[in-house]
Length: 317
Image 1 (cartoon, rainbow, N blue to C red):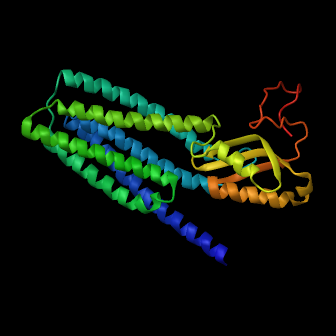
Image 2 (cartoon, rainbow, N blue to C red):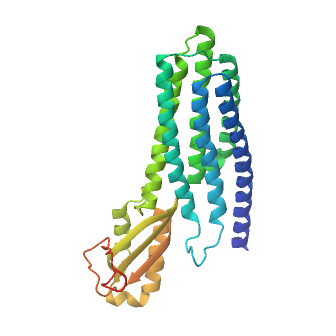
Image 3 (cartoon, one colour):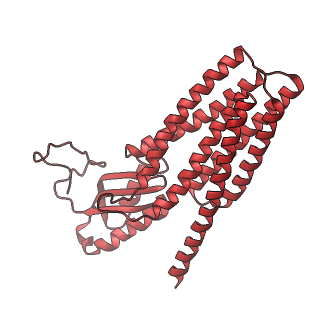
């Protein structure tokens, strides 16, 4: 009964979160369109740059919604891990497009800095204020969920970043209105472009790391080795691999040598290791193999060989 109640509660949370994400995506998309149109109409490069930053928010929120949706899809015979990697691949492609947009912003800002152009400050201010209000509203909606979910936290930080960028645009519009100093428009664009660049570069780095099967940055490999070896009945560990299926979903495989007198407790020992890894490192997908004949016990990581089909011996046991 308790397990069923927990599942129902989790389903209710997911449903509520999906509802908030849908509204947040819709509102943020409207702000993106408003800033894009306003940027052209009022000749504000800062507003256009902020529109590019809002596009990051739309993508981040959509990706979070997509991650919740695909996590509920069952695996298939063709895709035994489901579609989790689609989220990572989308992040990888998006980061490239954002870097290209950033360089375009830098180019246009440099041109405008050398030759400042008139900007309609009142319209620019109105659009930026509306954008700031919407960003703060979306941030408040997601704040409670961001504490316990890395995906939501990432989207939440994107929205906070854009709220800061909107403040920059507001400052620029006020300065232009009172002083007529049009050069502040490209200066703010440079600042927003910098925020987009570092955000996109971070996404590119993280998604590349996952696609290349790197050890999750949140996990200390040596700590995992010591934890497994510290389990009563385990002699050593080798051929250890830890990777991310997608953001915040980790997997591990390893060969462990169990002390001869403890082999009748193999199932119990494996359960202890699984519990430790889940509690300490958020690793819930583990594959452990005992008594590996022919393994190099000094090779912690397990060297993998590329073999021609039908020839040689692969590293599988």
